[in-house]
Image (cartoon, rainbow, N blue to C red; front, side, top):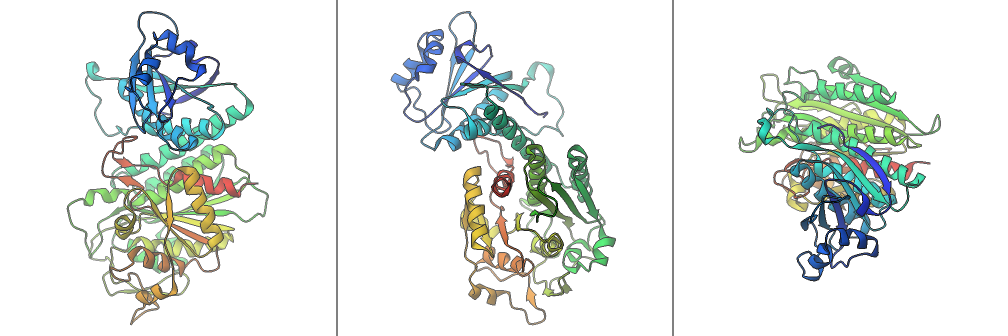
Length: 495
């Protein structure tokens, strides 16, 4: 699906010629004075629907109204409930509902109105409508002509005034939408298409589009760098593993960058510690952290944020092969520490260990990594909340604030020293699993061994980067999380 074209228009929504006008209203609404003319155009249907409680403004609630008779202005009005959420969050979600409904209707174009649609709420409306309207049909045959519907291609945001601030908010929303589109597209592609080479090509395309510096390291270069932990995961695959580095220089020369790190397991069978066959196809999403880094770099470059950022992606596949790493093998990471691999399905942390150590050469001001790392995180926090851990409470607090602004909730898990006992090995400096207890925490503590000397935060997005069920605002599949969290964190660091 191509990008939606967004425009701004000031004035009365009743005068906007559009096949569909989405009106976003809070819980228990009244008809705002600014909708009086629209209500008259629709023969009082909006007032009647609210008074008769046909529409109550609940979260994700919709009511479609058709204009009685001919005339100018909107042909249809879609009332969308924002619920009782605060304005920015409610606007983003309601716009996503509207975008998905409009795309399904095949109207081709839509306008969005909400009271005081400006600044963060305007940005949220743009990003939200793009999120809801996006569908993945790249690998499907086109339906018969009689069954085809126009995709949502144009959205007009109706504002009080077309100001410089409104234009900036619109552009920021489009940038976030573009980043999420990249992340979701990569996530939905199967493992035979979205390979480490494909992620590297995507990074090069982003670099070319925005004049970023890009470097791609393969097996040979990683061998020279003694990345034995990363290469242990890759030794069973014929595909060349990739360490991708994208550098955005929006800050002053010499300023320390923010580093974003993503796990890019393009498919994860579990290796010799093989996963159950049922549901294994979802392991194409195991590169979601890498997709989010690439999407965030796209958004950050579009927004021209005044900060230096380096994005690092560690990508390979974890497969069963005669050369595959085995339980009990001991490998040496690039920082010199030895690791006893007790479970080959705990492979993401082995890749990230060497990528985090590599990030030190950039002397970053802060590092945030994202990975679909542990099933334990899904058990602990479900599919709503991202697990957050780190070695610097100040940076952890920044990240948690970013998750809140982004509408991608995060929750901090403890990293007490007592948990480190679970990672002790009889034959190496540490082992790659700590047992069933506190699985998300021990995975975070394992990564912390390789992030020493850097302010670092880990996001476990195993439950939030993709969904195995329809979420209402989007179908099952890749969600784009945590692109917005990355962007919000970096914005907070920009000058």
